[in-house]
Image (cartoon, rainbow, N blue to C red; front, side, top):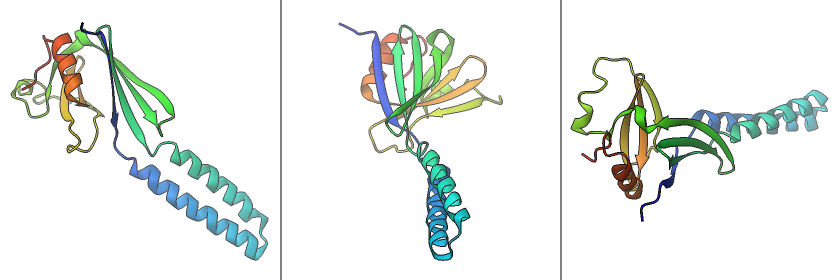
Length: 167
């Protein structure tokens, strides 16, 4: 029997700015501790604590995954930070999807030509992991990118025959 609930988790793009900020703040923290110990400056300890707290908050956003849920004619997208914190990104109504097709599909030729489309990327960066990149044109001039596995493709093909294309 076909279920009406599908869930899929994909790794997101690495946040290089957050990683670089974390590394810089850790180095600043170490230098401030060294300066405080060698020179006896109490301000160095205060700056080290501030840099350490900043490094902690930068590390919260370095590893991002996306979770797609299909429930009752809605696609919900959540961001999962460091495999522990979850933030709801958005909910898409299936009725407002104009087309859902692979990235290089000819079905996408009639959509988005000459328009300023708002791009939202919920896809993973690697293409060698067995996932295919799909483009969704959504009502209101939006282009949304997803990375789907074969099970989710089959689910969307069965549940969204009007807008979903595999070619």
